[in-house]
Length: 221
Image (cartoon, rainbow, N blue to C red):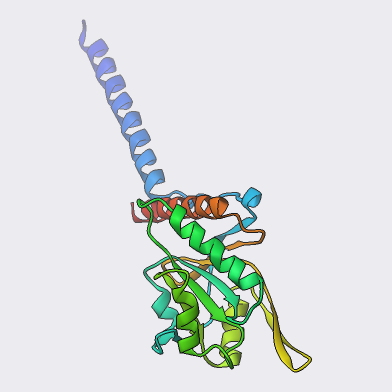
């Protein structure tokens, strides 16, 4: 093999190594900088997941133990939030019961969420009454009460509303019936509309959690 042939082969080998190196480098770069995966489509479970979670309103309220709670207090855990009130005759007990059944269906491999009742009737929902009410459903169930306008603002940031009505001297509260899923950054991640099926709620939570963790890990890479 003459010198020119050897030189040609050497150059070709260098080109192959260079192209291979560029391909590997591009793949690594893309893995570390890939766009976040789109939110899962959970329409069949009456669930809408935000591609970009929405911030909640700033608030200072009181929980069932009489302790002050702010938006920062929601950080670190997933939370199913529901706007309702303890004197609610039908929607709230059914919703809370569905959350309790969901809690029992969740895989132990998943983070165990909190369940939060945001009061739409703070005049009657004292911390003590909230504690008695939420304790019936489980230790991960909590309540928030306090200033009416603050509660309205928090409900609004959870895409919920409530309206007070006086019927024959009795206060009735019309309110949204969906669950709002708050992520560990204290942001609104998803809305789950009724009717609520505990099996679907558990599956939706797992899929949302897996999606969020995958995007979080890709961001860190």
